[in-house]
Image (cartoon, rainbow, N blue to C red):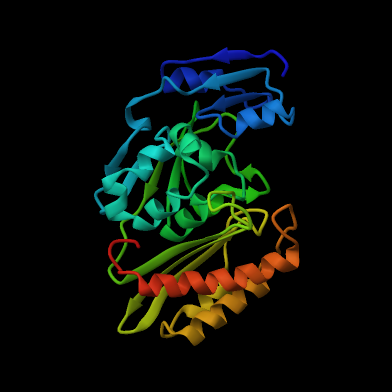
Length: 292
């Protein structure tokens, strides 16, 4: 690796002042689990890294919102989330996914903000947050703005964050009664590997009719994304195996899979079909407590 400057600001304001919107070689580093690998392989060669490890306060921890949802600080580690009783009781779908997200060594270091800002389409949490209707707080020297997670990921390893913006928090709203959701992770290798396909589903049932639905797919596509055709197949229908199969077919037909080391495009399309259906079925068979 080439030599670079390492800045360790003590406040958020100092960190923001060290970023440069015109210089791609200046970047913030949180846990660094992904960024360091890119540096070692020379995919990224920084001139300055702005370490966020000394930033505390609201950037860490999980708190309840007035609407019954949660606000999670961007510097909260994935391991802290995994073992959070508050997260487990409010969004068990996230707690389940975290147990098989990479390995405990990575989860001890990686942060939620870094997980999202990296923009890797193979991440586990983005499709779940898409279906839960989450949004992020992005801050720069110009001020703060809120970005829906559905608008955060714009391409392969690309986000809508400006180069001088930092994620400071993730807001996950409270969920209505009658909600069922699930995340189905399929990997062709070990259970804790990056997924070949990730499928997150969320639907709200009233009087045995699905009145709202969200279906999101990741890993098979260049970015985590909702699948409108699958959602349309669910709304105003009863939660039955036949309806779930129809929605899964719609998802497989809509996605444009990308081939990589995890599988060919045609293989991934079929895995989308299989695992969207399974996620819908698992959601129905789980207890509709909170958001999982």
